[in-house]
Image (tube, rainbow, N blue to C red; front, side, top):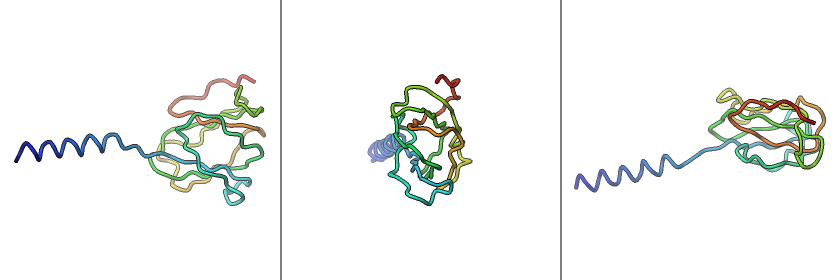
Length: 121
């Protein structure tokens, strides 16, 4: 009986350690996260996002980790024209709105848990 209980507890613990929460972001047209916010994207995904003309990002979810937003002047994230810290561990609250402070850009990508590289455009 004890062996079965221990096995069950270990199985539950192994499942709990694989569950990961994440932070999601929505790009919005205005500086206050109220106008035409787009679909939610995970900040854990480093893919290129074409979000020309956006003014802010609305964050929601859990497990906020250090994240930076890389700005690029073209549609393909081919270079970095600006890097903005957008999530700072748990300092960014659920449903937080962050204005985009960098230059007007056509595409963006998130990088997590690392410092910004120098601009290279």
